Length: 66
Image (tube, rainbow, N blue to C red; front, side, top):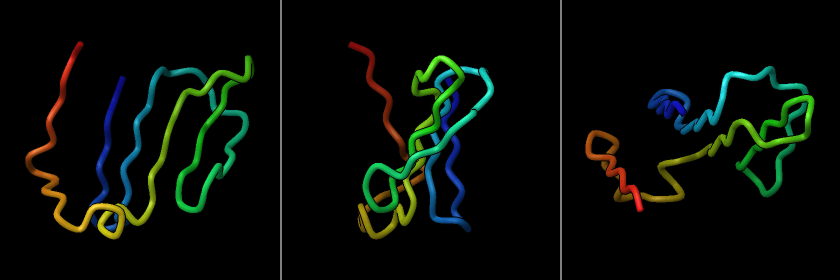
């Protein structure tokens, strides 16, 4: 699993595995799901990140495992 934050593009991308993306669907404005051949979600992209969370501090992302 990989998390990428692109400050210039104002986007966050969560990649769940390395399988090839065969389709991308914008499920709500600014949120795109990537699907592999088996129709599993393998990536999630959030655009306009700063407007979704104006107080977001990209240097202090927190990860929690439950």
